[in-house]
Image 1 (tube, rainbow, N blue to C red):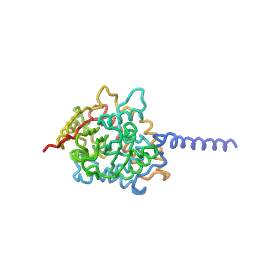
Image 2: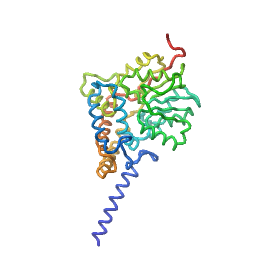
Image 3: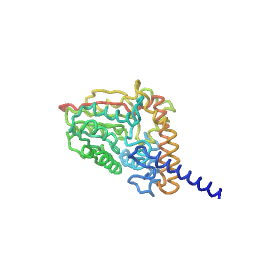
Image 4: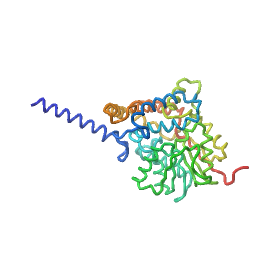
Length: 360
């Protein structure tokens, strides 16, 4: 009898622990993804591992990619693989922000997003573009803050579905619109938008000039564009093997066809016709370390990995999800090292204006 009671209590404790791991600690946000809902996005469950293997093979040596025209397809694959994990483990805003003492990570993220729209001086009701909107975390914060009409574009159809769902839940679907498309060839007419922003998204473009040219094309003359860019900083040394290892680790784990130098950003903007209004690395002091959240979240990563392994083993999560989560865990370490050494910044800000009259 005693043995039966002990067995029953042990089973109850295990079941309670699993519920706590998956249902209580699992969601990144109260209204976000749950671990039990992890999927491969638009990829069928049985093909997740094969798609992961193809992705990993393609981005094995990011700077040596020969078929740049295939990059958008593999970026699409990447976001099918990682979107649910990002939402579950990070939140609905797939980017970093400086740590703000006394503020939660969620508040710090929102402040970073609101700063972007404040910089481009839009008025309520004006139309602005979010180039590379993901599942729309920044879009919703920006729409709520500015009351502007925000149109986001993402190459990933699954993210479009998630963004529309979140927009409706937040009561912001009247201000937020999402379309599926490639920001290298956008389905918008010239001179459509009263402003534009991109938050840590244009790094996926094989050539920055191509995406900046498209953004320039769809903006009205005299309007502003701001971008938070992923770059190597002035501290990066190409002859330092540790530096190269860190940067390549970031590129491989984030679907980047080669990180750009901070020196290339303004030059590219001017080449396509923009006037550079301001340029600043928002990661530099007095800003607090953006990578603190990654370091403080290591226990959560391990906890989440255990959850993913269990769910994959019992068939709830697709096979291959463990590989994807492991890749992201290792990439978080490379990102942290990039931040600590100062050789990498995910928030090199550039503010540009499209001239009132294009040069002849």
